Image (cartoon, rainbow, N blue to C red; front, side):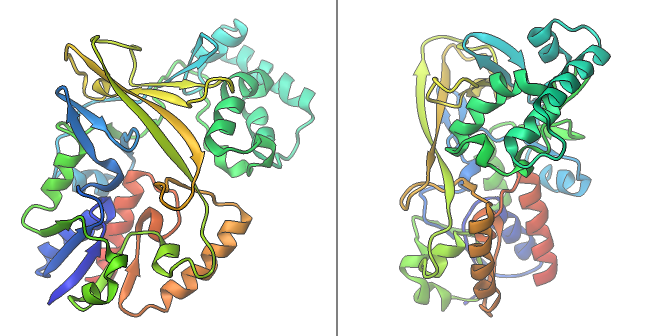
Length: 364
């Protein structure tokens, strides 16, 4: 018998497993994949740590979370400064004075503000009702059309006028020359990759990969007093109320016989004609000097069963459906649901860790 069966060896599961083990609990961690670390999994290719499930850049303002994660990895000084490519025109992200100068030739913050205000007024927006209106009210029509619209519609598979405004409310807009996208107090990439970091978190803990909990639920439940479930909440209940919607991502990854393909870790392709949303050049997350490089093109798609679920579609319909599943989840006496899939919630990595630590406090 175990005190806890933890379903999922990603960040939430690994944090909880470490906390429970350190407090004397007997823990078993299982994962249906053949590896640990969930979606932060990194795989070494040509000496480069490739982010197998998309780019993950750790950033937080929470010192407790930062101190916790630094127990298991040493972080480098990587700062996220992506570049936007619109039909060969290159712009700085986040939107800052470099972006405004490239777009309009303005020099001062006041000139940039005036230009945005002029375009916002011309669009007649007072209270933004959707993502399109929210974006125009923040950065004006020109930037919306060139740097937001195409990228966002590829990412979500819907017109911007049909997407909720809150998706873009935290859009970084700066009237300075600061290129730090996140502007977080603590930021970086774990040296040696995320898989190494999660392996350190799970050190000394029994882990079984290639085990699908839902295929053998009764037998696995019998092994432990409590279950921490980090898989999809609707899958746990056999989709009996219907499937929650996600956006998925497909990656085309290739090794190139050149030391430098695009000169930056992330380049977003913001026109609607380019089929992929961005290209990641993995070596630049760790300032690599390898003779070759590895790139991944990212293609957004509508999720269907069998695909990897990435981004919850938190619209009104799905939020209402999740509320029904949450009621069912709360009625499960033995099981605690956590993480991005268990709570049907988009989580940055620091928020996953924060949530797992809070869950451990309640449980233990």
